[in-house]
Length: 224
Image (cartoon, rainbow, N blue to C red; front, side, top):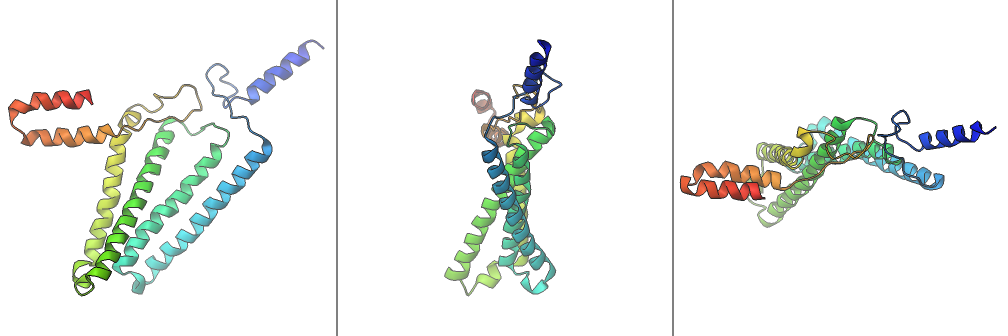
């Protein structure tokens, strides 16, 4: 009779852990009311399903019908693709409702990198659409000459490539050593260092600067 409460208390403590077998190293789950957890689950699921389905329809329509493959619609296709992937990544937020990450440190870094890459590409696609509409309104006579499918494809490729490269430099520390910022097992923490991309740009520019200024620039890069 005296041992049973101890076992029940131990079971409760293990249920509150992300990894019950790792008692001393596991993170604790977030304690929230069941109603709030159910509401968050339903809301995220609905957002993910709607975003996933509607953008998939846009992607299929533009990809299937050749008459819809205009320069403007190619930009819309890029935007729909990024939003489609955002809807897919929302599914991972459902697994994070209790504050536990079960997919490993490498997947944690990959998830955040993809999240930032897709978001940056989405913003870049909206900027390209704005430029496209500006040229169509303000320079309508030369619009077909300036805005061609080849140029649009190059711009979309550069948009996605620049987003990928920049975000990889921003997450450089986490990519080198995944999980280095986690305090316990089951945590997904990454640190965004925007100075990583700045260091890369400055270090590439050093080669074209006279040698007498190189030491000063190296010192400034290391200091930042």
